[in-house]
Length: 136
Image (cartoon, rainbow, N blue to C red; front, side, top):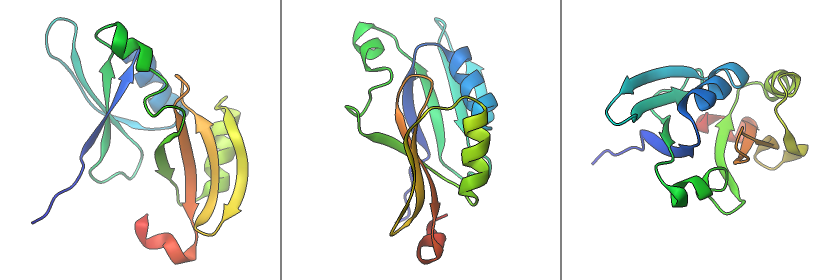
């Protein structure tokens, strides 16, 4: 049997502001933006080099969903953005106003820093070390 996760839903306030953030600040590519009905859209964004998995930007449809925007995991790191050059991406993201809430540090698995997306969701920017390169 072969299975894989291909999309991860991320609840957002607005499609266009989320697309702008992910494509302009993080250099993700807009994979798809299809209008469905009733103002809904199927919006997928993915980091450069991503093979299969993409974020599905899902606009909050009610108050309960709106309340979860920016806190989908109760304040824990939500997503992990692997890179082949930590310092290049850290400098670029910092220069674009991305807020890092935990500074860069060396861990047993690689170089990592925690940043916030436009809504406050926490992400790891991570370059795996030599022992963990196979996961990138």
